[in-house]
Image (tube, rainbow, N blue to C red):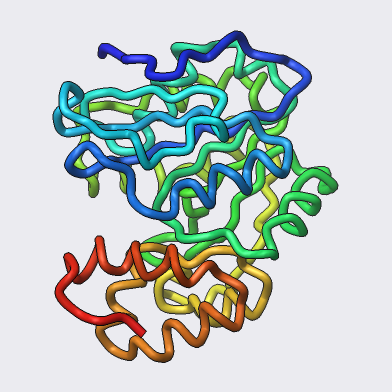
Length: 272
């Protein structure tokens, strides 16, 4: 698949930590809030490569994207979801496998808030070579794939590289979930022989998606994000509560208003 480098990556530094931010730009424009994540990642020492999937790579407007916060900005034809963006970036820059750490993440979250610095310090301090933000017992026990931090030991594991190399651009959303996300923890622990740490672990009796249904509990535990797909659902149920919780936990309300307007309202209603 062809990649267009809007901001070329000028070499990979093996002594650095990188983040591959998989993003989808509907209509060729980034969602409000992506710059918050870019700047937070950079502030914590990550060199960020944005891989943006577009429905039409010849039609885009990146004027709202803060290029200065990114090490590189790449665009591609939309297919294969975030997993294929991660695979394609790692294949394009294989020296990422030789770095201190690489975070595979996406733009499905709003934030982060002030808890992010503490989270990153904890990830770096733990001895586990693979760290996920949350786990889930929905369908089967698994780790959720929107935030996966791989240290050097994991990046150098040939079985993990093979797994990432299998991400298929032809797969639809449910195929990606069942083929790649749900089996990942089992594969990492049994095939790769790598231990996994989970930053915000939910108990086995919690059989629903914690990032969606337990978002306020996660925030109280120090979770630094609100998953984007729960913003509209909670806005429609109780917008005052959504904004009150966001304010309490230190999120940028101006950016949140713009994101809600883009996701849910298209400028048709007044926000709290």
